[in-house]
Each structure stands twice: as C-alpha cells, then as structure tokens.
Length: 409
Ligand code: ARG
Ligand code: ZN
Image 1: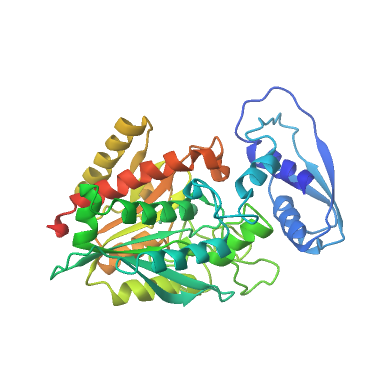
Image 2 (image 1 turned 90 degrees about the horizontal axis):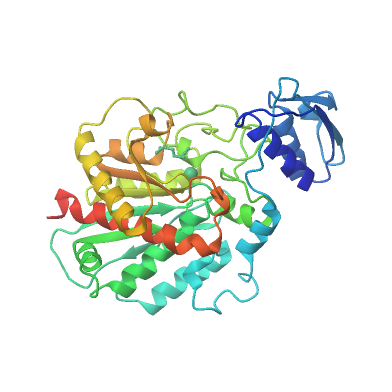
C-alpha cells in the first residue's frame, strides 16, 4: 500500500515542479487486494507510466505482481507535498472507535459514520423542541440519509427554509465535521447570538450531514482518498459515481466523464444515484420554501455559486458576487485567511451535473458551494487541530449570506 501511495504521489506531482535531476524507475508492486488492484490499474493508465507487466491494466487482479515503468526521461521531478500520510490518517481516526464521546472537544475531531448516526439521534433527543430527524432516502448500500430539521421557537406565518448538505465527496472529511459544527453551534447559540437567532426564527434549516454515507464509510475502512459513492453499474471493476456530476444540469458534458473508472464519472443518467435522487426529490417537494442552498466541500478555500456547468452568467450574478465578497471579507477580517469567490466555471473549472447548479435551476436563486480549508498543505487530510478554524470560517460565511438575502425580510 505504501509503495502504491508513493507511486501515486510521484505520478501526480511530477508535473508540478521544476526539474533538477532524476532517473527512470521501474516499480514492482505486489498487489494483494481488490482495492490495491484498482489503485494499480488507475496509476498504470496514466500517461507518465508504462505498464510492463501484465500487458493491460484490465489484467491486474489481486495476486498480480505489477511492473510499472515511470517515464522521467524528459527531466521530471517531484516534491513531496505530504510526507508520512499514514501517520496523518492515523491521527484523524484516533479515539473515535475507542471512546468517541469522551472528551470536551467532540466537534474538533472526525467521526465515523456510525458515530454520526448516533450523534443525530442524540441531537433529536436532547433538543426535541428544535430538532426533527427526517429520513429522505437511502444510499446504494442502504445506509439511511437523515436530515436534521432545525427550527427556532418563534412561530412565523411565512417560514422560508435553507438547506445545507455535507459530505457529497467521501474524502472531504471537514465537510461532515462542518455540518455537525453548524448544528451544535445553532442549538447552543440560539437566543444568545443575534444572527443565529434571526436565522432560526425566520427559516427552517435542513442539514444533511453525510450525503454520501457509503463513500464516507469506505474512507474510514478501506481507502481514505475515495471520492465517489459506492454504486456498481456498468463496469464491475470500477465502482462509484461522482454525486456532484449526477444532477440534471448540462449532465455529463465537458467537465464530467461517461467512463465509470473516472473520478468524475457522471453515472448512467441524471439522478441515477439514490443519494442524488433523494436530495433532488426532497428539494423538488420543498422548492416553494427553500430559498437558500449550500453544499459544503473541501479543499481550496472558495465561495462559489452557479454556474459550474456552463460559462454563462446567472441573472443575479452581481448580487451573488456581493454576498460572497462580503462573506470573504469577514473571513479575512476575523481569521486572516483568503477565500476566493465567484462563479464556479470561471473560478475553478467547468463541472456539469453539480447539485448547486441544479438547485439554482429549480428556482433556489441563492445557491452556493463552499470549498473549506485548506489550500493544499494538508488537503483532504486536514488535521483535527485545524477543524475549529475551518468550521468557524465557513460558519461565518453561511451566516453572512443567510442574514443578507432579501427573501428573509
Ligand atoms: N470541487 C467540486 C467538484 O469538483 C466543486 C466544483 C464546482 N462545481 C460545482 N458544481 N459547484 O465537484
Ligand atoms: Zn468535493
């Protein structure tokens, strides 16, 4: 596994740095598990490598010894971005299985899927007046998709709603951590902090802490770097669809892939994945009340809005810029951290089939994707000690946008 990881790093970062000197290498990779076989197939189909043995990636199975030639003839070098990822991963999962509820800093740690389910239950029991748990569907592997509905105690006639989903992409652990952070903060600071009180009194807040439970669980048990869900469709060797390419917004055009082995595989058809369909069905049936949509990802520090699926500007582009600009300024002021902001396609890349674009087209005109910390120092492996800052920044941005949108008044 370690050899594979190093190899993956080599191939991924080779392109990034300036050359000093280096030499070609052939790696021998003893593949023992199905997962390792998948990784080896993946690496061996990249341009910078030539598979020496077996003859084709399809032939790599558990039990195969893979020989891989790394082409570095054109003076390719690399820098080690992260050393000792194993130790970092170990740090992230420490003490969740042994005694998850032992310490005061519960929200400053990452939690397993099972633990998050337990937490959801506990929230509902401890705050029966403000929290309801809704089951909106289940995943490919039949894990439940629970949504927490948070409501203030004030009855208002025309109550709007806001939606937050976390954990579309399995390896982005800071995202579910944020949903947990957001819920506890909202409950603790209701009637204490004026923004939170205003937010909860004027809107019901729907929070989906883990939109991709199968993938999330898989990152805890098997492959920390898994992104997609875990559905099996056309190709039994290549599992998973990218849920953020599976929504009906210029579905499967440039920026998504029709190939099941790819990380940005769009699935068989829009909403082919039960996780995407559950969210889409829920939002469709609540579209008259939901005015605000947030999807939480990592990493990159960006506050994004539609479109990601085309270079076209949305009609309220200027207003959305203003909202995220204000949020970014507040983050800068309080946490001395820079967030980029703008329409997704121009800020990062074309990414069709995203949940935010779909929600926007449904009529939720305040629709956002936030990419939380960091900028790549730790990437998906953000250490637990950095959870609180990352979450506080995102919380500030969510509050800032939520209390500024005109539909609230
Ligand atoms: N990084 C995320 C992804 O690749 C979000 C990119 C922007 N896409 C979007 N629909 N907002 O899926
Ligand atoms: Zn993501």
